[in-house]
Image (cartoon, rainbow, N blue to C red; front, side, top):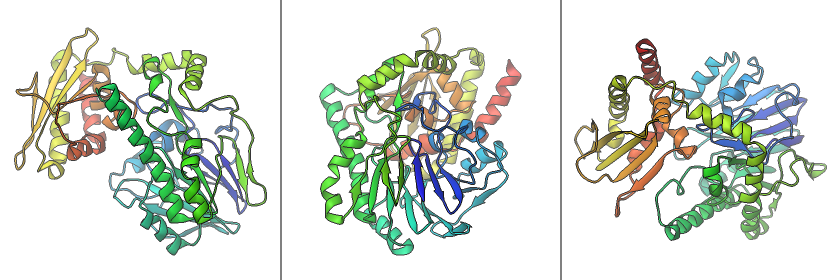
Length: 448
């Protein structure tokens, strides 16, 4: 067996005469055109990988299975994934004309080829994401991607599937919390430090539960390159070296060797870690990312202009009915989850002429949520600011609120004393809006 890490969660497994590609990210930027791969290539690309015999996908996030990435690969490749309830990944694969998709059962090993066995491990809290365990050539490789688990669940993996030799484990939670919130610097620093610690704890939990021979921190090879966002890089997420150092004591206690790999590096049972030094000179700090942003200024600028384009906005008379239709469908579809929620959420969508479009949603326990335009009566518990083009791309285009959230496009101001409104955030980020957006996009095309 030989492993080739392409950065982030993209892993190539060469074993049993096969080449398996896990969670590729080959097309950028993603998440509302905000995320770029970092450290940057020259490590292998889709064009230089050669034949891919099997494609393994953990979930539908674009940094793991994006439409642009899928378009660069052979749509006839046997593709393995879990059939999540939302079917978002299934629709994406269908749009990309993938014709050999093999939906697996959670925890059930499948012999994908002679001597190559694949098992998908579901998230233990119900998220639509899976880990992957690949057994071949007498070696078990665990690919953790964005699927942090409880220690007991990691232990269950070993009980069910056997000891793990190499574990690629997540170590940094990816979201725009806390830096999208309007907090004072001291509060921001405290919350950023807590988020870093949470990411390290994820890595340590994987080591505690799996007790692998080798553990590799991974799935955080990305950066924000826009000038306004440069300071956010590594402010609230640890670097691979920090994660490895923080886990060193626990790793020694359970007999795990921590290996900090760089994109383009390889590993095999015979040679261990083979450092290729393909990303030498790129540092995990704001200075390194800023230097890369300067190098890629033209590409970053083009992505920003594409995101902030104004030519696709609807007539002003069409915006309010479209908003009402979109949020009406969202609120109706998610009624069960928000039934006991008490909250007032306000939205400011900044237009090209600096005139914001304002609307609000009010929740009360036992009552149907209400949607209205203009300024709400009363002080909002949370106020969200975004641009009008971004809002329109969300309600009638390919962007979801989840993309805006991970892409640092939602700016949030909390009322003093307001709590954490879990049901609201679950609704906003997880609602599957593809059908509603497609209808609104068609209606918009007819009005222009």
